[in-house]
Length: 255
Image 1 (cartoon, rainbow, N blue to C red):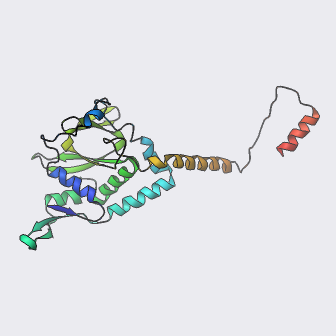
Image 2 (cartoon, helix red, strand yellow):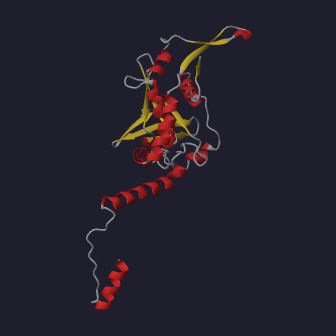
């Protein structure tokens, strides 16, 4: 079975690995993982130092960040994402689209009871750009088959490393509560981070100083023009009594 589309190869690979059993008991982490794991509190996990909630605020307050993220997210959500199977033998093998009733195609087209395919892909792309990671919680039916995919906020997720399995699990924090997920219950996309392999690097992070400066400049201009570019009533005081000449000189400089 194969997922085919243009521009979202990372999404199709991740979903395919989850449905195909991505985490096996025989998997072991690389030897360098031990150094990384020993540096962190495994109860809290990793992610708090990389996925700041403020990056999400930029989307709602910065016109530049909103436009850039929204443009890419809308582009990702437009292409069709379909399931195909390889048919034939030898050199005559071809990819054929499966019926829309196929369980995997139904999951892609309707990932849960409230979200469409396009909506889910937009959220995944937006979260990757804003926080460097995107997480989908996997829900299963009574038979154990994947039935729903739900987006989870990256700034609330913590990754728990493991010396043997590489990822021990995930912890989602919300309103003071913690929810634990097994590795096979989460689809995790992330952008490469040269400083931390267990956290994605936000595309906003390198630009945050420019974004902050632009926001402060806009706020200054708003406050300036809100008062008709006038300082309004001003009271000037002094610890000493100025002479008439000093007062006249001050008003001259003020004007």
